[in-house]
Image 1 (cartoon, one colour):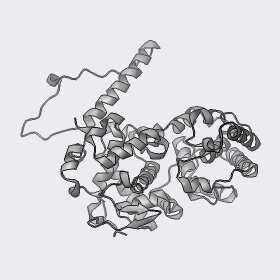
Image 2 (tube, one colour):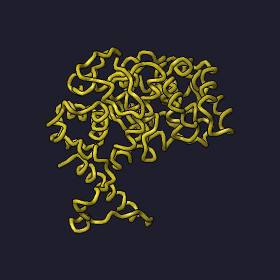
Image 3 (cartoon, rainbow, N blue to C red):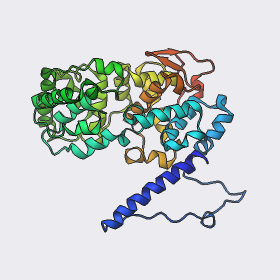
Image 4 (cartoon, rainbow, N blue to C red):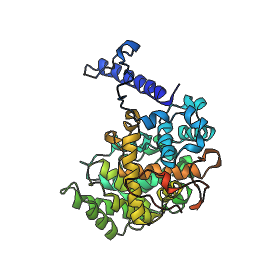
Length: 379
């Protein structure tokens, strides 16, 4: 069964569950008409085929890719990677071995491997628990982001109603005493990130007070421009945030999602990615892009544009608003890098990344990457 037929079945099953809930609670919910061969109009040979799914995406199925792996471009592989990541675990029999292995990891740890950040348990949790009407909103979000993101949900629940940095620290100590340090190890961002996170009460209190002060200044002027927030965070002298580009990228993505911050331009995002020089940059390098602001800006624009055209509607529905944004691109690129660092999940189409270094792959050319401008040279 092709990839998108299974995906459609999965979404239909989810719809039926939601419809039952709606019926039980007496509120309206749209219905899906029963599919039959008779209610599908077949075009004649003289009529152009019209479909909500791009012909390019329609052709990228496991069967097609398995027959012609050498013919796939880096961008086609990216589209396939995202689409396959949206499949249920029982689809592994139709996938290439490296894809099946990656989806096993994804099922075990979606926070670390999923392309769809809003579908992750922690993201759904903060969207329901943290409210911008709360005067502690930003302070709680900033601590949540760096100290407990991706931990077991029962552990995260213990930090919901913190009132200060000291309160957070006391709860953190209690979890460590009861469940051990392993329960507090944030792995969603990679092992290196965790090593740079301070776990002392002073740092937690500084982040709390900085978030509280900033939110007091911001909340009457929302939404803020990207330049305003960058200047505010840079001048606050906060552990992990003022000097940490990755922490700021993660925070800014959350703030854009909540309408606190106007989404940065591709140029502003490119500057952050180049400065951070982390997973997103390694992901771009695996696709053949150079590390400079102009090329990264072009890459973000090209990738975002292409994904919003080529991904099928069911896949795009997994992104906020049904569209791929600049922070989704950054998030996906991090997963590309993560996939290429593991032998069992590595795509043969992309270049290989190891500890931040890109190994040149024979046959990878920037000319294979779709762009509205001339593509960059490979690294």
